[in-house]
Each structure stands twice: as structure tokens, then as C-alpha cells.
Length: 261
View 1 (cartoon, rainbow, N blue to C red):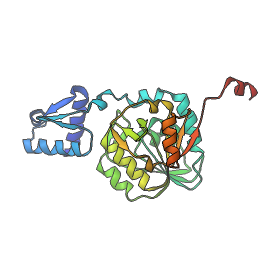
View 2: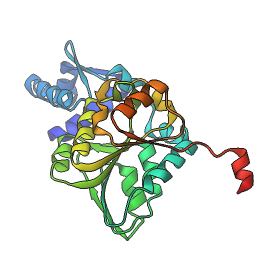
View 3: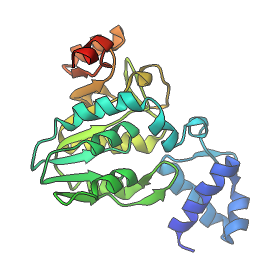
View 4: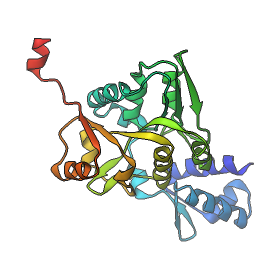
């Protein structure tokens, strides 16, 4: 069995049992302790597990993270409005990077620009955009995470480093006064590289992200535009103004406005 296949099976085991010892890796995959330790080092480096005494486990935040499909349904109307506003920023012939994010997926669904190149490691973004013949899709390859609908691993950043994009659209698990937060260390590394390889970075996030919590931080310096669905908390708005980050709000249409339409 190749290491890549073994790593995926270790992650599947962790989803069911939360932790796995070196001895369990040796027994289940018939490998030496040295091989088991190398597997652990690889997974720790990729930020998907934490080392424990005698093995590995999933971080607590990963255990509690809702599935991708659950998050897709949550606040879907708000994400639809945000996605529409974000998609309108994309111009014909541009190269854009689309992050793995339920809100970014709504961006993908509403892109009207033609002859663009889309770079992504999201399974669902690929599925949505592959229905169109007037654009190109470049898929960042790696290991497949079925639950969170993405490809991941060191090759994602390697491929991003070879790309230049006009715009990148990213999401966040939580937004605090000191930056964006994510449950996985690899998330931050990938978002940072997306930002470095793009002329403009657009953060899309609904109001629930401003009361959420997560673990790994990305500084606001990588963001140019924030698109959200409600008025921002005052302390965050002040920080964004100081950093010259443009804020676009997409509030729910009032009953009076709907009647006028």
C-alpha cells in the first residue's frame, strides 16, 4: 500500500474513532513503527491531525466542524446574495481562484463572465462550472476529502505558486478583530498563497462568521474587499477602515422594496 492511500485510511479511521496509536497503525496496515511515525509526521505537517502521546488525534475544532453539506444549507439566502454580488466583480477573460467554501460555491453558481479561467480545489466548484463550455477550469490536485468536498495536501500550494490570477475569492470559518480564522493550519497556508498569487482578494462571509470561533489565524492584510450580508460589528468595521479594506453589504431586501418592485 502506498503512503498516500494509507494516510487517507488513517484519516477515515480518525473520523470514526477520534484518535489512533502508533501500534494501531502498525497493526492495521502491517507496517513498521518507523513507517507509522513517518505517516504521523506527514499528517501533522499537513495540519490535519495533532500529535498525542503514542499516536495522533483530530483537533477538537475538527471534531465539532459541521459537514460541508450542513454548512451549505446554513444561511443559504444570505450566501446567495453575497455570491451574486461577488460574481459581478468577475470580468470576461480573467483568471480567478475560487476557494473551498460554501459561500464561494454560491459565487461559482452565479458567474456570468465568459472566457475566464477558474482555479480551484473544490469538488463542487468543478461540478458546477463543468456544465459550461465558455470557460476553463484548472483543478489543484491532491488527496480527496469527501466529507469537506475538497482536494488537499502539499501539491495544492506547489501548484498555486506557479499561477497568477486577477482575483481570488476566499471564505473564512470565523472573523475577529485581529483577522480571519480557520480550523486547519493548511487552510491558512492555502489562503495565504492564494492571496499572494492574486492581484485582488475578495473575502465572502455572512454575519454568522463574526460570532464564530476557530483556531488558525490569517491577517487582514491579505484581503482587499469584504462582501457580507449585514452591517459589521463596529470594532471590525473600524479595523477594516484602517486597513483600507472595501466593504460591500448585501442586506436582505425589505418588504417595502419588494412591494415597489
